[in-house]
Length: 451
Image (cartoon, rainbow, N blue to C red; front, side, top):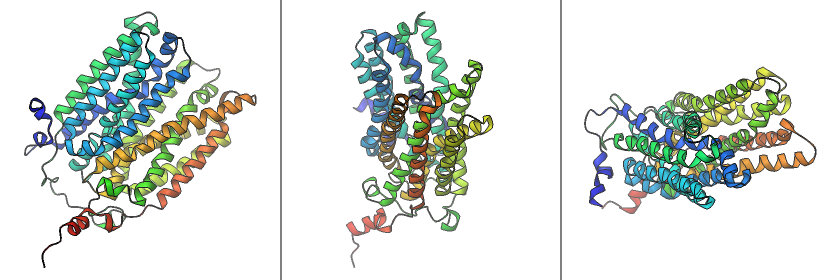
């Protein structure tokens, strides 16, 4: 594999004078590409028509990709940490773009299982590796602003759909008069575009030298960090043995379950809210929610650098529960309340994703933060199943009882309030990691010095 040695971590160490502000655009190139998964719904109805099936088997392709995102991030997290961001981004590009290629071939040959294999399974692996690949690198380049740096990159994942949705519609309009006939060539084209974009990110990314630090930077004192930032490192294998990891797992699961649950039921609520008004107004509001999801990833994660990670999650979960409860009580009866509540809810959903890498850095240090992040993303996989399952099960029950429209989702909103309260309590219980898990102590124990 000597021909690929340029991908090795040692070949990506930045030279003296390299600007760290080139790293966020490299990460964005990857996250904007894999963020297309949020625009998968553009293809749902054309795929239903093309294969002559219903929404459930087509929707399961998206669920599979999200499950594989979490699983691949957990399984390959340690490899990503040691192989370096360039090699990880390269592999992510091959898997993500290859998923489009195989999926497009499946559409062209009427083999639905190939779409599962391509977009769902292989593409999902690309999602997981691509999602975590720049995280630890960003944190190492920005020890003074970890929330801002990871927020910049992960903002791209939330914003990828803003580019992918109109681009996908444009491609399907160009390739055929019927969207069902244009999915395959659209998949091939998107795969090529994303491969080029992700490769640009891979060849731009650099890791800092071991002794590098921002000019004038000194680690903050405990009083400046709300007592939550560690002065040592914890390995990924030790991190999953700590209560802090599992409490944070519950925190992320609660935030993502509530967010995905809201997105699952947003469509009928918006239709009810805009009943009798223009379709343009409804589309504009959906765009506003997408912007809230994207901007929340940057705004709230950057704010966490100032107020601390634990307080910002207190807002995500505590205020989020209050906002969900507001929707339970008032529904779509108040224009102002509905707009404000839904926009803030989606900004908290995005912010929760972007802030968690910095929270992990505070608790476990930078040694294997990418690998720890990968393991934590299994909460996303679980939430990707639990959120839609709860919402759809409740909707089916309500529909059988004669309910319709936004009334189908009254009880599921109430359930999400409870989920957020559980996450709120878990966040309150998080404390600094016990020193016995610190790597420096493990090293001292394993290699005792002579007397």
